[in-house]
Length: 148
Image (cartoon, rainbow, N blue to C red):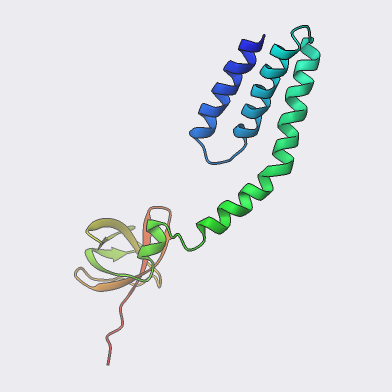
């Protein structure tokens, strides 16, 4: 039965490595500790093994997850995503933007994005626009006001 707990610990660790939720990690540790207890106390019953697994896993989850989440959120402050970095940037209209016809595209940093006007107006091809937000896979833009 110790092999089962060890295999479960490994499987849960693999799941944790493919996610960022920090949940499977605690259950993986719980399974590993249960495997160790089973090896040390060979005659321990399955009910006690499940209890040990549940108690250790939940205790670790309750005690440490809030701390880890807080640490990761502080660590991530100031790290903008690629989408955040293009908001406020200029782009050029490559296809006339017309919300009624549901058409339009802009070129941002060398990439073509579907685009919609923020004010429902039509924006002609080759106009310079400002990216106001990203909504799904569309850039919401407004025409750049001429300076001076």
